[in-house]
Amino acid sequence: MREVDYNLIVDTVAKLCVDANYFLGDDVVNAFKKGLEQEESETGKNIFNQLLKNADIARTEKVPICQDTGFAVIFLDMGEDAHVKGNIIKAINDGVRKGYTEGYLRKSIVADPVRGKNTGDNTPAIVHTTIVSGDKIKITIAPKGGGSENMSEVKMMKPADGIEGVKDFVLDRVVRSSSNPCPPNVIGVGIGGTFEYVAFLAKKALLRDIGQRHPDPFYADVERELLERINKLGIGPMGLGGRITALDVFIEVHPRHIASFPVAVNTNCHAARHKTAII
Image (cartoon, rainbow, N blue to C red; front, side):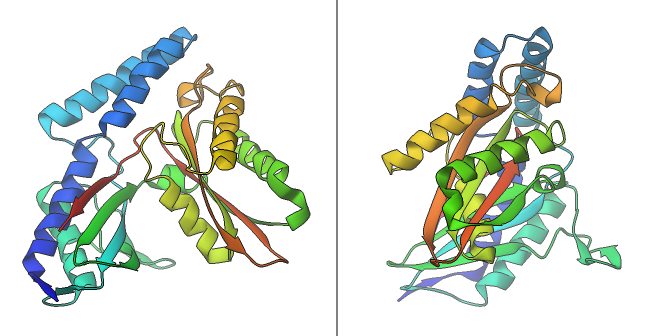
């Protein structure tokens, strides 16, 4: 059994919080550059130039990419042969508290969903834990802003709806979202599992790098088709018209009950933020 120091978890999570909000991934920046080349609208081109400039300012001046620094969503792959000296969930929340405070990141979490009152430190985090083999601990943070999260949806479809029904639902969700999630977006799609698990799948899908296709050729083809069809909708950058409405579409799937066909769409804004560390 490998012992892992509590404060190592705290410091690692704190750094991930800051890095995810300051430093947009190279895959996303390169997608902006590709979008600038492909966009036909002059307004859209101008927006892509602004997105590139914004990402550069955030990186060089070490300030948040967006004022909405998100809900701290943590994906934790816990090695079965690793043991943290203390409660790892508490350590993660201590790390979020430290990162959001020392990194001057906006605190957006209210303690009670109905009665409000800001927690003041962006805790608690949402932690999705998976037990894996080995003695390593993999921590991924994906700060999730409210504007794009609000354009997400779960639908309990009929098994007979099939993949064409999934495509129609995804396209309809993008059309109804319009400019609200600050396009060009990254679209995560979950298929299968249960009501609650399919939403997790859709969010997990957003952790992929732009351009990374599903390992199953069938779903890879669906991702490509959806991306092409979304980019023919004409919504465009920031919803002001144009060719590029989405940077990518990712699908994650899971076995389902014979009577159920859960499908979820989790929309991400153009600032597709996520950072990973392995301890």
